[in-house]
Image 1 (cartoon, rainbow, N blue to C red):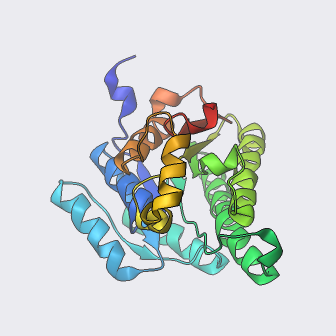
Image 2: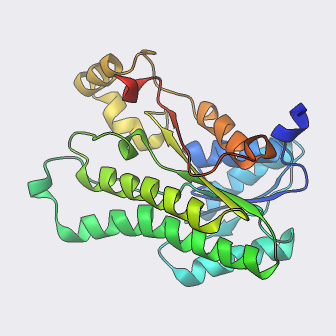
Length: 255
C-alpha cells in the first residue's frame, strides 16, 4: 500500500452540515485530499465561505442549501452533486443539533423529536438516498457518520442528544452489515471540539474545568483533528474497515 490510498482523487463527496465547525473542516479536508465536494447546510451564506476556502486551496466545490429533515431537499442535494460532478462516492453525515441542556424531566417532546429528526433520522434519510443511487449505478461508496463521544458514553444533562448519537452508532453497525460489500459505513465519534456548537459549555468556567478534568489530553480538539480521520475512513486506506466507531475524544471514553 502507498500513501495514495489515503487520497480521494476522482471522488465526489457530499458533506452535510458543511457550513461551519467540524463539517466545514471535513469538507475542506476532503477537497485537499482530491475530492470534488458538495457541502450542504441550511445557511447559504456560510456555505459560500466553505466553498471559497476550498477553491482558494485549488479544489472544486458546489454548495447546496439543504434541510436534512426534508426528503425533497435531500434528493435535490444528490441531484445537484450528480449534475456538477457525477455520482456521489462519499457521504459524510455531519448535520446535527443540540438545543437542550438540562434534566430530562424538563424536556418537552417536541424538542426531543426535533433533535432526533435532525441527528438520527436526517442521517438515515441521507444514507438511504446515497445507497439507492449507488445501487442504481452498480457502484461502491463510503459513508462516514459523525456521531459523538456521546454515542458511546452517557453525557450528563444531554439525554436527547446522547440518544440520537447512540442511534447513529447502532445504525452505522447495522447498515455496514446490510450494505456490504458495496458500501462501507463507519462512524466517527468526536469528543469536545472548539466550534460554535460547544461554545456555551466551553465558556462556562465550571463546566469547562469539569470537562477538561475528564479528558486525559487536557484540551479540546481542533476541527481539523476530526477532519483528518474522516478522510481516512472515506479513503481506500480504510478499505477493510466497516461498521467501526472511531472515537477521537482525547481519551475521554477510556476513563
